[in-house]
Picture 1 (cartoon, rainbow, N blue to C red):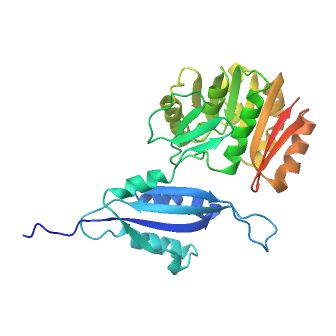
Picture 2 (picture 1 turned 90 degrees about the vertical axis):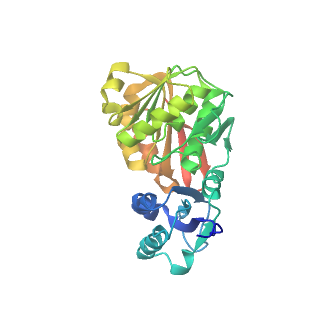
Picture 3 (picture 1 turned 45 degrees about the horizontal axis):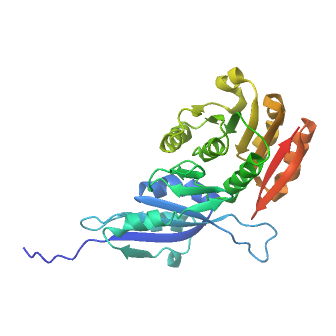
Length: 301
């Protein structure tokens, strides 16, 4: 047999999807690719009244022997989701390059004094560096709602002390870790999704904060751990508008007299709903941060 066989190659497929379509397809995409990278595109269609939350999704496959059926399956999945066939072309990448290219899609991101680096990098040694691999959990630091929260935390850290913080709907744990980087605080990170809790625990461990940050599974303020701890100086929630608005009375009960709430995951048109609920609960707006279509609110008593 000849020793001059052509070297096997990996592949890359890049496509633009709205967030809802991506979330619906994500399990199938992950099943048919070795790496999935999704980045927010800051784009507003000129004739649309509201911004469109678009993602540039890049799928990578490692080199394999023989034909790899996954690219064809992905093209079929995407076509069924309404993606035009000419937008699903598959490009070859070198056999050792697919992983490097997927990791390179996560360059460091600076938000205020904080810098987010991918989990493939060396563990952080500087105070304001956060190492995170969101995996299947939300919170890589690249979405505007997460960045708004990080900016809000940085702004608050220059103005007040926090010794106890709650992160409701922690996702990857990035905001819990950010709070522990910015303050000498003990942080409780909560999520109802066991996958998110596992991801958050890994993020906490990777950042060397296991002694001060605890990730537990639970339904927000109804979790037993929250009831035992009582109040917090800081409560942050980056979820969606209606669930946040519904929790306004619980925020008020658990927030200490000098505490602050950071709320995100809100589209600009949803801000009024959330503010009305929190004002009725006795909190007032201190600062608003808008990034793209997303708004982050800082409230105090």
